Image (cartoon, rainbow, N blue to C red; front, top):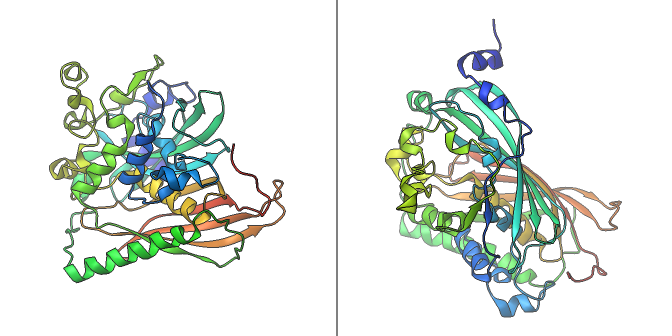
Length: 397
C-alpha cells in the first residue's frame, strides 16, 4: 500500500518544479523610493491604527524620530506578497493558497526614502494527499529583502499550497460555510473590543515594555467582520496593486506559467492596453478574493482574505504589543483556515519563554500566537521571538 506522498506524486507531475529549485528568480523591483503615504496607506489597509505609522507628530517623539514602516510593510515592497518563489514550475489546472510564513528580521528598518530589492529562489517542496483537494504540494520559497544601502533587512520563507482546483470543487470542504450575519448590538460589542485593543498599545505609547513574565497574555486583537470592501482595501494598500510601480529584474520566473486556470490567469498582452487585465484582482489569480464566482471556481465558498495580510496582522499584533523599543527577530506561522467574508478574526498570544542570557544582553521573549474565527476554528498559529528593551537601549539611528 503506497504512502500519501507516493499517491500524491503519482497524481501530480512535479518534474517542471524540480528544474527551478535553487535557481535565482526574477520578478519586479520598485521603481521609486518608499513614500510616507505608502506607509500610511498600508497601516490603514491592515486596519492597524497605531499612530507611529501615520501621525508625523506622534512619530517625531518616538524612538525613530519620524514615521517608520511597520515590519509587516516589508512584504509590501515585493510584487507578489513574497509568494512567487514558492509558485514555480508548470502544473496544469492548479491554484494556490498561502500555507504559512517564516520571517527573520535583521535590524535595519524601512523608512520613507528607502528602496528595497529582493533576491528570490524556490527552496523545497513536499507532496501529500489532503481532504481539501487530494494531491497537494506544499512548496517553500525564499525572498530576501535588501535596502539601497546593501543592508539585509529581512528574509521571508513563504509556503504555497498548490492544488488542483477541480478536485477542491469536487470535495467541497467549505461548501457548508454560509456567511454569518451580525446584529447591530453584536457589532457594537465588536467595536468596543477593537477600541480596548487599540488602547493597549496607545497606553504603552513611547514607553519601554520592561516587565514581562512567562505566562503573560497579550490583549485580544479583533479584526472584522471581513467584507468584500475590507479585502479590497487591503489589496489596494499593496504597492504591487498600483499600475506601473515595479519594473522587471530580467531574471527568469515561471510564476505566470505555473498552470493557472484560464479564468485566473493574467492577460499579459491585454495589460499593454489596460493594466487591469493583469493586476491580479480584476483579472488574475487574486480575483477570487473579492469575486465569489471565482472563489467558488477554486474551491472556496465566497470572498476570502489574503495569506499575506494574515501574516501582516500577526506581525503588527506582535510589534504593537512589544512597542517601539522591542525588536521582533523571528516569526514562524502556519495558516490553516481562511478569513471568509462575514467572519471575525481574533488574535491571541502568550509569553511562553524568557531567555535572560541572550548575547545581545537583552531579554528574548518567545510568544505563542493563535488566530481563530468566531466559531473557534484555528486559522493560524505559531511562535515568534522578540528582543525586549532594557533601560539603556539607545534610540534608533
